[in-house]
Length: 437
Image (cartoon, rainbow, N blue to C red; front, side):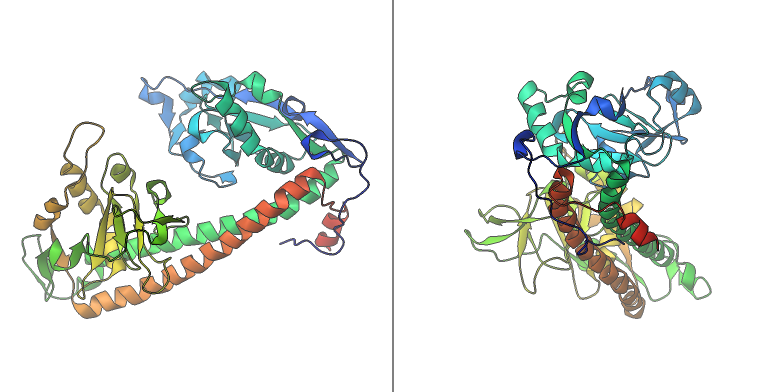
């Protein structure tokens, strides 16, 4: 990893004006986005023909852009047939993609393989005169400005290809200086991506253990089994109703007017255990209240179907947090644990049951908490549950450490970004040669 050192000098020597900064640095130029490479607006093949979609070519939409630098997986993929229908929109590796419509305006990613986007994205196929990683960061640096201009345009915020192409960035003329700057920022993003991949692997391992132990009973198949209402289960385990091992929407004390950690629905992950973002708000006497080791389950469509579920572990000792009224809070009783509840809430059988019991009008359906009164689960013996908790606790400890490190790295990158992208901090070109030694 590259870190800023004493040989990275603060730039001085102002020469005239440079955009809103009023700065100009030797060797830096102001250019329109159109000068950086070929601009491509995405296209969606007909969704009426299912053969246009498959598993081969990533089809990028704003939903796939979740704050990461690289797109390594997407919700949908195109088939060979679908790719041929949008052949003029195919993007090579290291293309920079920017969302240019709606509330997702300004989201930016880089593609890691041949891909296609939908029409909500404009992309820059960077030419040989520029480093694509530098261009990614240069556009990221003006993303707030892109967003503000787009929201001024129409009732539905949008930046078309022509408008997008005319935005300007600052860049070193020397591509080696571009690479030196991009290398510093990429080292931070690469470490964050490594942390995220490690955390994803740890959660997948924990999910696999949960399924193996408590759904398929694989470690216990050499032992005795007995019949139950849910089929054959290990001897000594019991079938119980959910409220016997979980408190649904437990009483948590939080006085009106107290400023406490607040979690929005958008900050509940779809496919990850931990909550990474929250703020502090004054409690208004309405909203779900929770503490560490509780599990938050979205009860409203489409959040439930999308998988929004989280394990709470970011609060201080004895601290109470609060959030959306659309959360169901699941708290462990002594016979179980928050880890067990979290993976239970993510299990296929539990989610199918919750979705099947949603009530209300189309588009505003919710899960009534009363439906869980009749939901039956298999309660393992205490020593088995204790072993599971010990294993998963170690996984979550590493995940939390990685997330905290990534947050520090994000803050560092965001602090360096505007200074490096304006030339306020200059990076000697020979930094690459020194790192290579």
